Amino acid sequence: MLTFKFSSSSNICTFILLFLLLNIISLCSSIVLPTTLILPVTKDSSTLQYITVIGQRTPLIPVKFTVHLGGASLLVDCESGYNSSTYKPVLCKSKQCSFAKAESNACGNFCLSKPRPGCNNNTCHTLDGNPIIDTYTGAELAEDVLAIGSKPVVLVSQPKFIFTCIESFIMTHLAKGVTGIAGFGHNSTISIPNQLASLDSKFTNKFGICLSSSTRSSGVIFIGSTPYYVYNPMIDISKNLVYTPLVKNTFTTSKFSEYHVKVSSIRIAGKNVPLNKTLLSIKQGLGGTRISTTTAFTILHTTIYDAVKTAFINALPKNVTIVEPPTKQFGLCFSSKNIRNTNVGPDVPVIDIVFHKKSAFWRIYGTNSVVQVNKDVMCLAFVGQDQTRAPSIEIGGYQLEENLLLFDLIEKKIGFSSSLKLQQTSCSKYEKTS
View 1 (cartoon, rainbow, N blue to C red):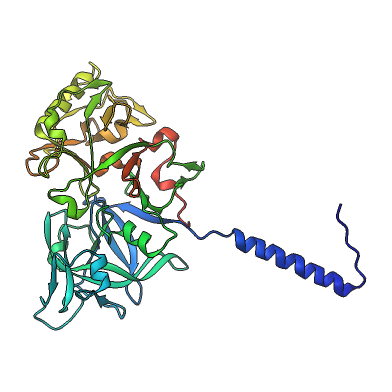
View 2 (cartoon, one colour; view 1 turned 180 degrees about the vertical axis):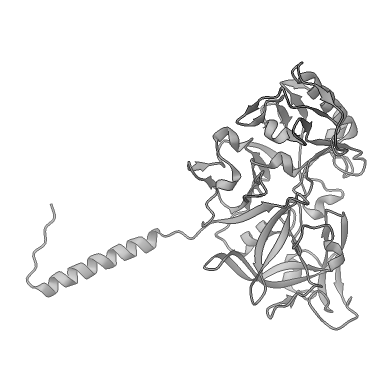
């Protein structure tokens, strides 16, 4: 055992001070700055859009954004009262313009009125827009302060975050109070995850989306490295995911950084659904499968929907009665009187989305496959639509709720968790003060 002898009280004081100093140094060396950001996301009950709040400008104000998974940038309405002392347009041939890879789109003098945010000459422009109304236009790139978190806990602050400054007419059909679109696309240097990773080495090019199924509680976007935790009990929901490669669409929508995956088949109650496989591949920018947070319910090409609908009916229990849909939105509805409830929602046939190989599939349970439209009727929560000019399958927000999707932009792959209700937890149980 180590012992000490002290000749005076002053030596004792010196020892105590040294002991405290060594402990402080040890504590400081063990402190790790956060490498994962927490961005709360709520569901708007009217539009079914997913909304987040990000701080911007000087003085800093909270701005509401609709979350657009495939968006190329942070898109802000600069025409309706944008005031900031730190706003700075991105000039032509500047390093910021080059970083945004926007010089090939447009660069020059487009403003015919008095200079203001969104209207300056000799500025760098990019093509961006609103996926809700499927409208895109050229718009000015700019820099301003961006902050995630709120006082007294601001998790990250960037003084020169590049964003797209757009006119008000583009921002129609967004949820009440929303004045921007938050883009998380993979193929853009100025999307939120890519730009944060380039500006701050603490953050990796990864993010996870975990949408809440309730309009009364918030889900979360994790930005940065794993693990991603929910609590009570504490669970790392980024473990044991099913991964599939990100598929490039190099023909049309690639500039908008949408996320495409390969779907090779669909199974219902363990049986393969007969599909026209040519629709499952991307050809000249059309077909294939896209994941979207701006589409409320999964949209299927008409022929795929008809096959899924028939297979789902055949897999339902014989005592379940098919009824006339009470709403035009859905094409298959049935009586819920003989459908029992489970921990993963109504006990209906499971749907497996099979990716690039048979062992890589995402299982969709009743909580994400059907929706209760009134007291006695539930409907298959998929929509049949002529997808001639769009993906054959567009996976919508309702199917994503209470699932974690992890987007690894380094390895170019996407991980799927299946319903968190299997683990008796939910997307709303993240640590809101992290």
